[in-house]
Image (cartoon, rainbow, N blue to C red):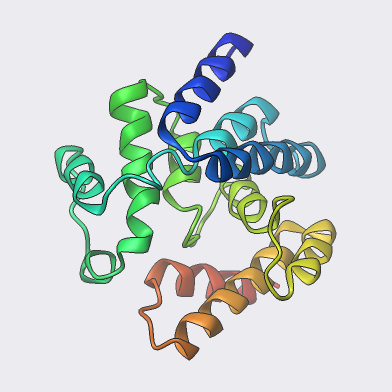
Length: 190
């Protein structure tokens, strides 16, 4: 990934996203590079995955679904009923099929940046946490997850997953099995 590609990606994002979402992507990319340096992930891959993680976030759901289906992805029952998760899946397909990114680690980092999953790579964890802790985030407990993310990727993820799972349950919403599996794996490996 050369610098020219990063500039091209930024131009593409400016076309596709609102100013607020574009700023979020820049912040996630910056945070991802910081975590990559700290935890040993590839910094260039972290920059690209962080930048592009929300590329389809503002597309209408029917367009996201078309990208997913045309990309050969079959959604499970949980994913079908949780449209808020679609941008991660459609984003991965978009990067692969429209932009030509074939790096599996970048693709998986985008695919699982909202739910996490068991057996995540360091880059996947970096993008998950960078999205959770980017500079403009101001939800309750953001400072706690930022502090825990400085201790270790796993501490940050465990807190972030716990926060998300509790919030979804409190709202009576579906919890991704990938999130539950990621949470359980981190606990088992402590």
